[in-house]
Image 1 (cartoon, helix red, strand yellow):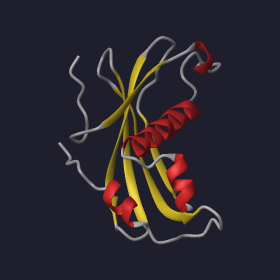
Image 2 (cartoon, one colour):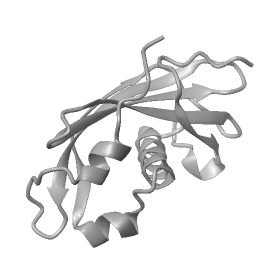
Image 3 (cartoon, one colour):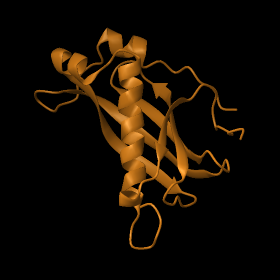
Length: 146
């Protein structure tokens, strides 16, 4: 199955929907899509060298400030999903944004599209703080809309 991504060069993780992710309506409960996007985001950060430990040592992290999510379809037990994200903007000072797309890899359907806006934060005080140079280097916008 060819997967039709909204942008080039996605960072991806794979998920197989387990029974424990199914709600009373028989499909994946919405909060698990958000959890999977969060897992994808942290995996992407770790893949570019910004693990939790590195961020804690620098006392800097990117905190979600705003999220918009569009739920387009449902997933069911046993479905194979691909969760992708891209860094789509960065002011290289304080703010950055990620776009997310969740696809069913068996049929290619897009189930979720989302965008999260972040602010660089001092992990000790919780207040906004200027991005360290390594954040600017690692959180680069490197994809184009298709």
